[in-house]
Amino acid sequence: MSKESRDAREVLDLLGVGFGPSNLALAVAVFEHNSAVPERERLRARFLERQPDFGWHRGMLIEDATMQVSFLKDLVTLRNPASDFSFLSYLHEQGRLVDFVNHKTLFPLRVEFHDYFRWAAERVSHLVSYGTEVTGVRPVVVDGRVEYFEVSTRDGVRYAARNLVVATGLVPRLPEGLSASDRVWHNSELLHKVDHVASASRFVVIGAGQSAAETTALLHERFAEAEVCAVFSRYGYTPSDDSPFANRIFDPAAVDEFHGAPREVREQLLAYHANTNYSVVDVELIEDLYRRHYREKVLGRQRLRFLNASRVVETLETDDGVRVTVESLTTRARTVLDADVVVCATGYRPDDVTTLLGEAATLLRRDAAGRPVVTRDYRWLTESDADAAVYVQGGVTEHSHGITSSLLSNNAVRAGEILDSIRGRTLASGSGRVGVTGSDGAEMRAVVGVELAGASEGNELRHVG
Image (cartoon, rainbow, N blue to C red):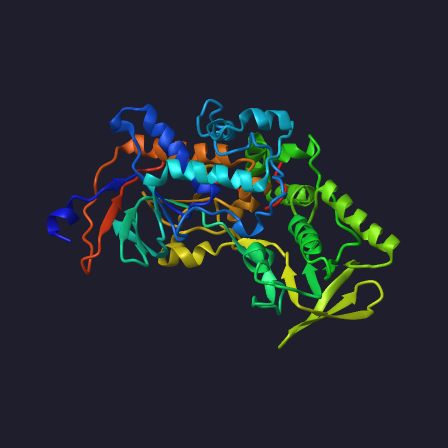
């Protein structure tokens, strides 16, 4: 690359790392803002995504599975009801708006909502670099203050960014002692793996939540001769609480109340309302599985088995399957199951943002429990003076912002709050270009942010409102 082209660097106002629904909602908000203001007020943004194109829980896009969140909680509606990025605008463009209205439901098919996300992502694709994996983030200090972050990618392109918005999503979690293999799957890989199974005599599904129940139902339907054994520690599947008052835990106003509450109150609220999201199942699916189980009892051929109040205590992968030892929590009796495949619907954990941020992570403040100290506008506070800022979206903020952090319910509003924060900082002190010289001929793009105005330190594929 010539010196001239390196010196004429693009100056951005924010750099998003990850491009799932959270940063997609932010990209749409940036696009709408830029379309409505004069050029001098437009924000310059770029989003980096390591996947080759947009994808959201592809492995669980079961054909008849529906969303557990209202279509009104899409990428934009709660932030901007007039937006043409809404789910209703998508339906209109697809020629299905009247059909959907006649359907009389708030809950679209999951495959349909995924297609809506892809439709929106395509409209802002000029803001996204797909197939781009971030490998490191280095703080750059000028006059004793962190002025921006140097972001390196695996393909050698580097960026300099004052405002990073990290939304790298969740990572599948397997039970202790189990590793993923051709015969041991996490449910996030279900549809990618199941088509390669020609026949099977037995499946074991571990887990008590929506994904576990959906996996059990799918395998029971698809493999008509196979036994499907569902193993979970509860006595039975627990219905999700989606009643109107409980659903208020997902309201935007609830985030304000949660963030401002004492730590012990926040922990109580998370415990009280875990049954809106964690290890719970839609009543309709529970009833469907029970009907199947009872029907088989009547017919005298029990293919669908529930090993409740139980846990897996040992697994041994053999040449032709997986030997699973299940122990009853009440009697301590053990059952040995020889399975062709074990599917672990055992949830997710937040991605390790510390590993991603590398050297920059040492600057970020943590509370006594080692969790990020995050302001109300989702900015992770730094230990030292900094003009640069790191914003975080996802499960990493659940302790500070509530149960909606990793869910779709507050996605549109959260994107608007982060955008407003970045805009406020940019307008408060202006923007410009920073001179950063790339090494080894690699391209470096500069991202300029500004001093945060008025932010104060804050307190320490499932059901979503």
